[in-house]
Amino acid sequence: MLSSIIAILGGLIAASSLLVAKKPDAQELLDKLTPYQGWIGVVLLIWGIRGILGSISVFYIVGLLESIVMFVVGFLLSYALLSKYVLEKNETAKEKGQELRAKLVKYQVPAGVILVVLGILDILNIF
Image 1: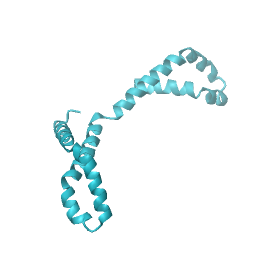
Image 2 (image 1 turned 45 degrees about the horizontal axis):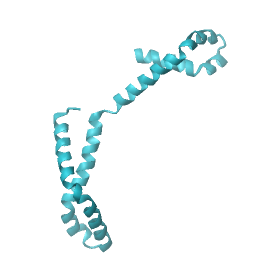
Image 3 (image 1 turned 45 degrees about the vertical axis):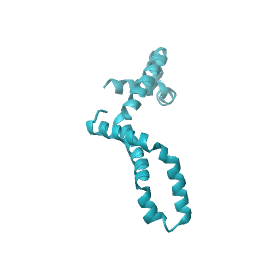
């Protein structure tokens, strides 16, 4: 309810020129709000940030990170099998796969640890 009132007040001030053009007697009401325009703006700013951060749940961020790390670890762990059955017929793809694996292999252990932690957090539903 409070959020709706703040939104309406901020919207009225922001659209004041349109309101006055459509209904000139609205100017009197808007003049009463004008001294508080800055404070209403600050409240809208803070309330908006709070709403944005509340919308972006840490749970979803953990899920996204978990998926990205799963992809990397999955690629590293399945590379030998992929190379044998998928990349074997195309030499260019095989070389590029080996280059990518060589770049990522140093991250295998840290990625594994991160994946374990993210998996546990996901199970516990901490976020």
